[in-house]
Image (cartoon, rainbow, N blue to C red):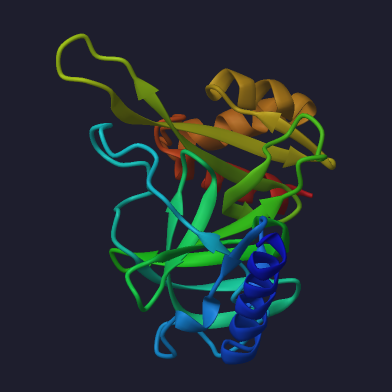
Length: 235
């Protein structure tokens, strides 16, 4: 009896491999990526590398995504190859990006293969890079590139779950800002953190801020950009 069951299982695997050629196995599960629509994703097995996503938090209020739970137009670069005109959304609770499948499933892309991605939301383009998990004390995972020059400014978005007494649990967003200076990441919790990093340029930067009546706040990460750009052009 066991021999018959074993032979039946082998026959089933042989049937799957031959009827569905080119499909991949990832995370110990058979994942059929050719089900994905050709008008949504490029016909390239290299891009179609991931696993099907499952919502583990259906009872938590709000959602775990950046901006919206809808899929947004964008692009993804994987190991140096860029795929344009794709639809993606970014789960900032789990730090994962995903794209829709044709059969109603959602594919979570293999993060280890992703170099960067971009999304368009409300007529604005947001560019993200993946910072390796061995980067030291800096941010890890996907970070929004706010500014890149002699210095670089990054925003790391995340969500946490707030435990509510009556209404149930709810997602809320958190943002961390990092300045890359002399190859080292520094977290900016407020304006004072920023000014302490400037050292010998502090007086001139403070005069620039006052002269232009700039308001710098962690709540508005882009508010640091004019000052960092000015700092870059000083040298």
